[in-house]
Image (cartoon, rainbow, N blue to C red; front, side, top):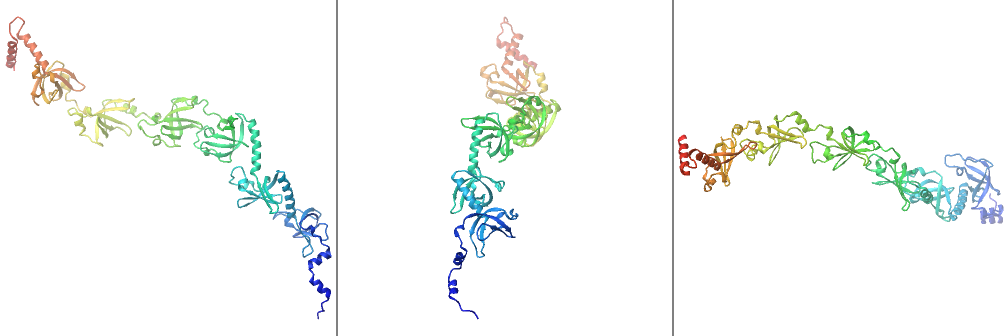
Length: 570
């Protein structure tokens, strides 16, 4: 049976137990939130028991002495600084924190550094939205992404876990916020390095740098506080179309200062200048007339560039690319990266120019044709084109020969003869001439047959009297034929001795007339004739034969006698 409650017991129950405990133990609540020094008394599986010089011993989790997965490096007797979270808990122990002690100490040191504008050391250990977390010796800080480096960094992994300096931009102890910058430290260091570098910079210096940026015309190289431009033409002796073919952002490079303007502080750099110039003695290595194999590196409208060796290129002008393909873009003859055989035509070492020929390593098709087909030989080919002045006959895959309209027929005019031919028709022709320099081959079709007028041309001489047949009557004269094969023409003024009879219309087609040969054009197969000249010559002969100056006979008597005699003879 339970005993009755006493007044003392009632009083005890009505009092706050914590208050009574404080009165009994005499607790000094001023230790809460302070940092104290203590000595480790012993270790358990989870805690370190610490004597901090108070009535009760405190305990600290062993996890606060080392990172996760690492054994804590503490032992009994070690003196450590600890943060008092609660003087005594319900178990009668003092709750201590090693981590908070470090944090408090760190905050105190960081505030001093912030006021003095000094750098602090820290380690990037985590990634958060908008940036990264940094451990500043126990105090956590925020590193914005824009403050990591001077330029954007794609991969921050190499910076993680590496102790490095930071600049405190902002801190609020009440809220526990610290914002730091790594960029500010780099910029300050960069400015110092830039000043030192600029002061000692001279043309010809060899420096180490890092490719900072790449553009179409070159690359910017960070020389350690100052940037220099490495132009695309100074990267290598060989042709580089874009700097990215030889460089990458972040790549370490060794460069030489080519030009330095102290006023503008512009620095021009070169990499190829550190290598041997391949153009030295190039004239001895590549004499004109020599043949080499090269690689096509670039194609333009005016030709193609061929690399003979790294750094040495020559130009094959479009006119030197093919014997037969004229007015064709070089890209239709060669392709980029194609291996080609070329001949050296000319070398200008001063201007760094080599003229090359592509067609010269191939046989001239006109020379080859001239050797294989002598003048007068017969060839056969397809009519590839018909123009107003003749036919073009294909003699091979690349060359044509031309049959002029005047060489189509002995009897017909050129216009009439061309009507008998059409494109694609296969014809035979005789080789009349081959001009290798002008790249021309003259052919003739009518020459395959004997000239029907050859005998007449041989027999007809200037001054001879021939019988002609009128073939055409024109306003300025008449056309005639001699022996039906040879063409002649009698001008209006040569139609008669009497001016009144010099009328073409008094002649009829098919009429036969006698005329005197004035001239013979054997190449054109034409005669120039005169009736007037024949009549005058006949008159002279009649006077010489039938009259004299003292005979007293009239001209009419003389001519009449001559006419009667001619009629009698005929």
